[in-house]
Image 1: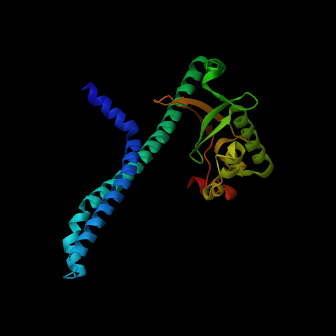
Image 2: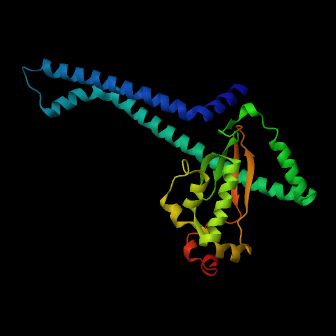
Image 3: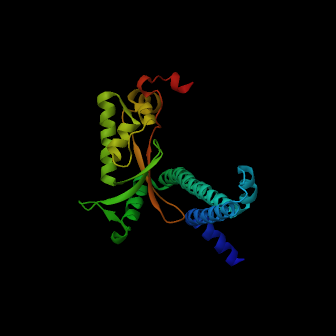
Length: 259
């Protein structure tokens, strides 16, 4: 039973890689079997030169030579599709896990803050962050730790230092105060232009000052940077703004966005 569970766990984790390798091998074997079948078919046709064969007769006599190649080709296609499906499933599972973990962790933080106070909760969180070992992290040229973040508005991951993200949050609010609005693409550009590239949807979604006033009675967007840990040990920070972006942020009205 233990061996079976170990095998299942191994296949679940490395199934995509195994299928990708099998597909690569299958391509080579399919080509080899196709070549063998072509040689056999050509030999049969040459041996019957005295009585030339029609195309129909050639197909009837030679189709069986291509059965191994067809079987290998079908298996190769199945491996390719299976590998792609498993990879998509793993990515989707990680995304769902991050989202669910982010929400539960935020709720947990609120409950802790209510019991011991927000200042004590913040103090405990900062002390826990100091326990990170220097040899286990990457740093930029200034020595700041480079972390993995998840940006929910664009549903993408990026790498940046905490100081860079806090600076981007400042520019976010400056943009709101100066222009009255900011798109998802502009926000992502402040965070990490290299990894969070511009998308068509990013120009259609965004935030505006009226949204903060109507929905939150505020003139400044707050952000949370919640550290999360998945079962496989991957550390990620869920970057959560107080309000989600809306599609009609350039023409935002309270009535339209609360229909």
